[in-house]
Image (cartoon, rainbow, N blue to C red; front, top):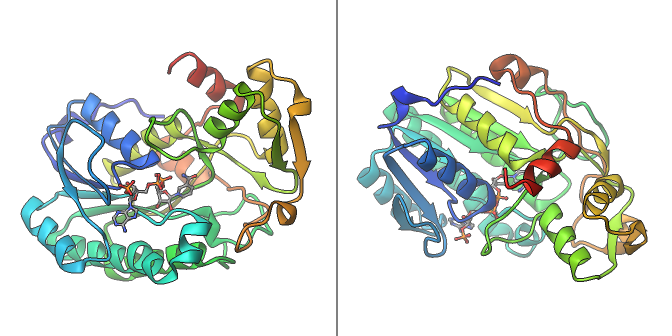
Length: 305
Ligand SMILES: NC(=O)c1ccc[n+]([C@@H]2O[C@H](COP(=O)([O-])OP(=O)(O)OC[C@H]3O[C@@H](n4cnc5c(N)ncnc54)[C@H](OP(=O)(O)O)[C@@H]3O)[C@@H](O)[C@H]2O)c1
């Protein structure tokens, strides 16, 4: 991966939406650490970060979003805000459309008019879970309200604004902030340390993305000439049970605390894709992206990065 500190961009006015969230917070913290001076942040609840100019906003409120854009006048927007779970979108389908599709459309229109780059987060859940090694040309076929709402957002952006990067990560994992919801890694570590035994899906296959690799890749894509859709994932494609085993092993926890289950037994309101893996050629070529193996990522987390 390139190793640049983006000096020529440090004074740019950058709007990061979803800054309390797992990905948005990690991006905001990395930019702040790099010395970026003009960070503007949004979330739907009050700010958990002690830097940047913060706006609390519900993305369903279009006029509030327009007002923030007029006030901030961003020179780059990184949009991580989303109803980001299957359950969230299933129980609030209209809200999911507003936040995951119509708000991104509004951002894209702003970016097109003002010649601003839009970096937007999509998801691997736009696919149906029947393929792996999927390229950016793979045909979407969402099987949940979450996946459909996110795919609609992608289509709006592609239609409205040429200067965009759309990033599709898979199962992002890593250390989280105290206030954030668990990701697979933090959930499992906490459960194992409490001595709980846990149910793990044994029929799902993923290519998990380490948050730290994702953040570096997103910044490279943001501050380069790259545009368009980019699939981003980790180095390893594996069964979720094997991912869990690697985590348990790294904490010297016995494997027998992991109960293998089929997804349908665990029960979710809508189906999850069973298989999800990407061909990373495009992003590798664009920014020399070389993600860590899962074993190295776990070590990286345990060594405090
Ligand atoms: N995490 C993954 O494994 C993964 C995988 C594939 C794709 N993605 C995509 O990556 C992006 C970031 O995901 P994430 O894991 O960081 O999500 P997250 O932790 O759930 O964070 C979502 C952010 O969006 C904000 N938000 C939620 N509802 C909102 C609303 N109505 N109006 C305005 N803001 C709202 C949240 O604000 P509050 O926290 O203040 O409520 C939070 O800051 C999303 O687009 C997601 O679809 C994530």
